[in-house]
Image (tube, rainbow, N blue to C red):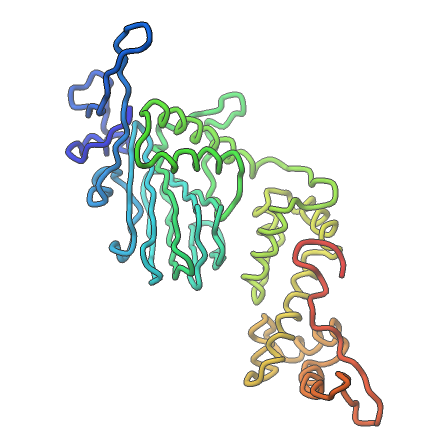
Length: 380
């Protein structure tokens, strides 16, 4: 049953400790606050009440809470019950906040709202992410995995942490998941999981204990279902990638423009095999993933070339080319002229007609600097 008293912190930690045992008849088990009332038939009825924990007792109550530095830049509230705990965290400033977690329990992070000016997220086993808009994103940290995150909030962020005792997670025997380890997942989306978690976060200030427990059980089952997803090969929808898949893939490519991105990484982000991902991506964007990546590099280079102060060599390095010659060749292939000629043409566009002179008495127009590929599908 749900427990809320700060005076029973040792018992609250017990569900997360495999060496401890809390039998329902154990006299040490904390009692819930209850209200006794009469039903319409005159029978006595007891109802559990949820009362929020003090922000000063989060670590003692949860046992393995996320560490937040500095701690005075957030407000924290938590409730716990057998095998599970929930904590709601609200940022109270726009200054940098750091989060750390490494514990023998599972952690589900629910970003209700939040946009960061700067920051990064590191989850053991996955590439780091500098995604700025994390609203409605989910992150799952399996027990024993290290998780670190930093935020410089653009808007006050609100997130929820759900802690699960691995020994008390449900097992889907029909799906043969008993021996399947939980996989780390960073900034993913799942409507069913999101809806269940959101119902619980709305009850952080108090709810019927049995109702909260029931929702917690559903949430745990949803996690088991999601964990099976990476092992399944999903057929792409007609027309290519779904809208949520397009958002995740394009955002990841934008964040890692200067890096070599393996196809397997992109495919894993949207839960597809590499083969189906390549087919679905081309259906959605009209070009293979590697060409889309290259085109976006060139578009970023065009933006940088329009700004004075950086050399062509520096810009090439910024967008991921190790040599000026390879950058020049790729730029010429996509834009039709060299980076130097493109920059010179931009300077000459101050001409009233909008055309740049080629020095021989005739005029030519520079290729459009808009992206060749729209962010979410189709050819331009």
